Amino acid sequence: MWVEAEPPQWSIYTRGQTDMERSSSSLWRKIRSRYNLVGNACENCNTPYFPQRIVCRKCGRKSRMVEKIYSGNGEVYSITKIRTPPDTFRDEAPYYIGIVKLDDGPKVEGHIIENGTEPKIGTRVRIRFRRMYVDGDEGLIYYHYKFEPV
Ligand SMILES: [Zn+2]
Image (tube, rainbow, N blue to C red; front, side):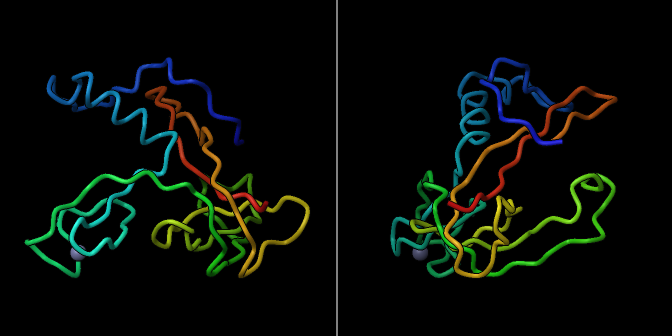
């Protein structure tokens, strides 16, 4: 079941992290990326990416990548209704997944919420961050985003 995301006050350490990865800057980056759509863009040709890329697909090694936070607003580019989901999403079926073309960025894949009307190609959407599920054994909380029609 999806619930609204809470303010970040829990431990976000995961198994196998080194002390370096637990530094405050790393911690802050991880929190930011849970509540923002953090991608990057090529400083040379401005091509936006999500998820982040180390090297620009167009410019290769001469590129310099800069972090970019996208608004999460866009429109549905393609969409599919899932009737037979994996076990993790069994309680949510049927649901929609699709590709959203962001107003200020690349195309991003994600769940698309049905809020009253059936979402379709061209539907305007905005991003919503949610707590997805808690791993029963580890107690780890997994966050993800969905797109909501506006
Ligand atoms: Zn480039």
